[in-house]
Image 1 (spheres, rainbow, N blue to C red):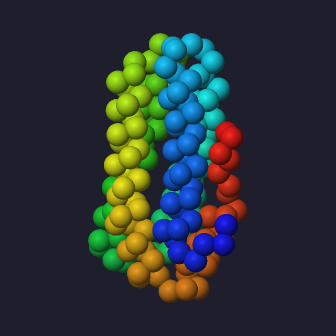
Image 2: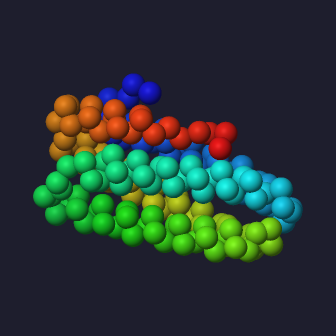
Length: 148
């Protein structure tokens, strides 16, 4: 990807992660064991995505801006919550309730909205071109696989 903004590259990653979630959700409708590999792929790729965000973006620069620091703290807390939710879903497979899966998706969607509408546009405003290029280069080192 040769995106020139943090927002552009992260929107693309979010789309890939979300596609993996949809594959899992579709397979889980029958409450059969065949959904398990889809869940495992989704969890793995989401963990890599969180590594990208926390390692390549959030810890890259010292965020002295209180608005950015506060958002990053919230996003990290949401990462923990999502991973805990996925651990619960994994434990209950293949008999996980549809409501739990949909609850997770609501959290994922809200999280994505915060990042794409507030955090990443703000970073693109406040970072210079060299910083953006460094972050994008780091993000590109850890690929998200849409096929799991």
